[in-house]
Image 1 (cartoon, one colour):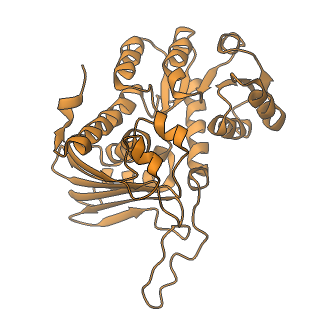
Image 2: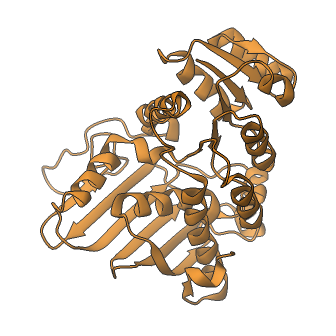
Image 3: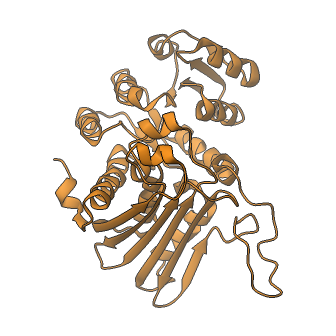
Length: 334
């Protein structure tokens, strides 16, 4: 099949490399507002360069991958759907939830699949954890812990446009909690602090946060996030039930140092970047998209799924700023 990629920055170029190595993909069509970015990707991974999204959609592509700036996501999703071309789009659907709701309303009656990029759904550990929950191996859950710690904060320009740590970072934890447990979040209580870069505080954001999520069956989920984790990129999940407990991310590249006498775990070089931690997951995610394009599977992460994680992020943002619990129904828009 022939896949178009719109946006050839860091993640777009990474997707181009991954897609170029998939057996199902015969050719790529690339476009970026910065022509040199598309040209560089074409030279490295192969593909035809065109000068606009319109030209790409007219180039006979079977599916498109949207890796452009967030502000461009709604228009590019809608353009792909109007052309009848399956769409993969990196999260978020749109910069604001209002825009995301408008996208959903515009596409929900269309028979064109859309897959939103939440790569943890394709990580082997998270897949195994979900299977254990679904099989009843843990019994009834009572506690979930989910962690995302970045090795260093993004630059000031990124922070200013990110929408805040809950919308930008924690939203991955929110999505994977929903996906692994199969439950919905009903209420949140979130706190945040500033322990490092002043420009994050100046942007009205926090660099370290904690949130308690109450799920619809009474399970409590604890989410911990930080922009500062000098030892590396730390993504983990624990699920504790009345029968058993499991963990995702407890492997030798875990960026944590044990001080227990005689303990050598973890023994590997710590993960230092999200592309390192999730290389295999990204490949599985895009492989899944080729199956969506081929019509052999439904979208594994829909616009509706992405918006559900977004509502949790909205509730946590409000909770942190107003120092109170917030129910999801309080922020949800019809």
